[in-house]
Image 1 (tube, rainbow, N blue to C red):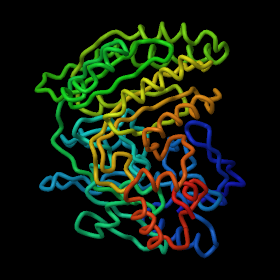
Image 2: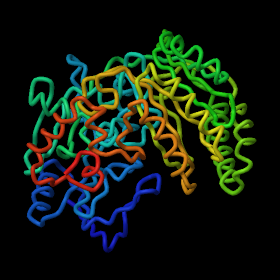
Image 3: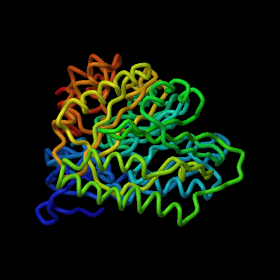
Length: 439
């Protein structure tokens, strides 16, 4: 087990650069036993404990001034069960590594988010999701969990074993224990055909229900200060495989979507008055394209431009009304918004604190480039989202507290009662959990 004192190694910062922590010490366990020992030692020293993956959360959900657990040595596939069609993976495994390993085995997850840099435990614990008519978040694909609890014991849970823990720990916020392994449902690898094309905002808004119903995975991006969107429809395909040509992919995904976009962000940050004009140009920069590839190559895309993000889940039937209100707010304000607004969907699930728990949901995500003041935009957007009983993504910027969550999550009390049982001394507490779950 390797440890590193913060005093020597400086501070921890998240990917977005908006969260800073100074842990008393860092621990990188090489086994579950070592991780459990680190939790017990922290208790002896009177220190809190948090685990952190790649730091892609924009909230302080992983921040601590106690012991920071880094799981990068807990990686790789433990086992594949082809009869049950499951894979058990160590918690520190990056989603990218898991997807590549599964593809080599002829297997795939059913759905993915749009990036795959996070660890499997970090992504699931915060409710990371993609878009889907019937297929839910990454956590909704979990069949079993192993976690180290506050007393240093190792607990396994599934629908049959400790089912009340399983119901909550799939999206556990790091409040119930430290996840050490996850068992996912998998299926034989398949092909997806992606159809990307521009559409006007009014077209998408008017046909949203049909676009959602007709496609397995539908999402779109609206460019603020314009009436333009770009849409993406992903559906299973019999083939043949027709990936984006390498040069064309580099031009569109790297040069335009990352390189030119980064320059546009720099210009907009230096001269905010240019942002509406840049937005109109950007909204027309990407042309329509269709391609067919294996799932993770279709679901995910490179994100090189660093940003800060807020995302709320609203009832699916309210998404267009909510988005229209957001659009009207931007248009009547002095705000200059250089990042597209992302809209996705998820079916209802049975995870206690999932943003889609018990209701079909749609997600609206707003972004600002790293280093740009975002508070005014996010505050105005959050006012609209909460008016529709929105549930914020646990890993993205928001200001809601336990009182609010008790009102929008019917099973909120179940989660806090389970936390009282598993972590009565609040070994895994930090300021963020104190705010969102209560003391």
